[in-house]
Amino acid sequence: MTLRVALLDQRYGQALLDQQVLHYRPRGVMRDSVLAMTSSSTPAKRPVVGLLIAIAGVAWLLGIIVPSLLVVSGTSWLAVIVAAALTLAFLLLTLGRSTRIIPRIAFLIATVGWLIFTLNDLHILGQFHMWGAIIALVGTLLAGIFVIMHNMFGRLGDVLFLLAAILISIGLLEEVIKPFLTGSLATVLDYAEAILLILTGIVVLARRK
Image (tube, rainbow, N blue to C red; front, side, top):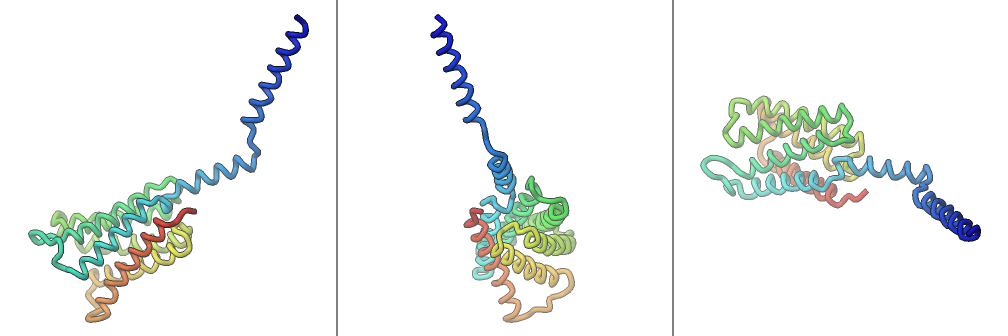
C-alpha cells in the first residue's frame, strides 16, 4: 500500500511538472507574440485595403481609356466605383485598431471627402461637389504623408501611395480653382494617378510582413 501511494504521488508530481512545462512561455516569446498580434491588426496589412485601392485604380484607368464605358443615364459608374472604393479604403484605415489618433483624423477627412464624391457621382449631392473636392484634397494629401511617416504599407507601398496622393491632390486642386494642366500634361496626370493606385494596391496585397 505504501509503495502504491508513493507511485501515485510520483505520477501526480510528474503530471504537474509536465503541465507547467506546457504552459510555460519565456517572457521574450510572449512579448514577441503580443507584438506580432499588434502589428498584424494594422489596417494597412489587410488585403481588402489593397484590393480596394487597386479596384479604384483599375476603374480610373478604364474611365480614361473608354470614357463612355458604364455610363448610364448620365451617371458614370466607373467614377462611382473609384470614389466608393477609395471611401471604403480610407474608412477601413480610419477604423483600424492600431491607427494613431492624428492619422485617423486624416483618414476620416479623406473618407468624408470621397463619400461626398460618391454621392455627387450618383447625383445625390451635386451642390456639395466643391466641398467634396476640398475635403478630399486635404484628407488624401494628409493620408499620404501619414502613411509614409508611420510605414503603414511598407517602404515601396508608402512611396507609391504618397506619389498617388500628391498627384490626386493636384487633380483635385484643379477642380477647386481652375484647370492649369491642359493637353498632354492633363492626360499624363490622369494615367499616372490611375497607375500609381493600381501599383499601390498590388504592393499592399503582396505584402506579408
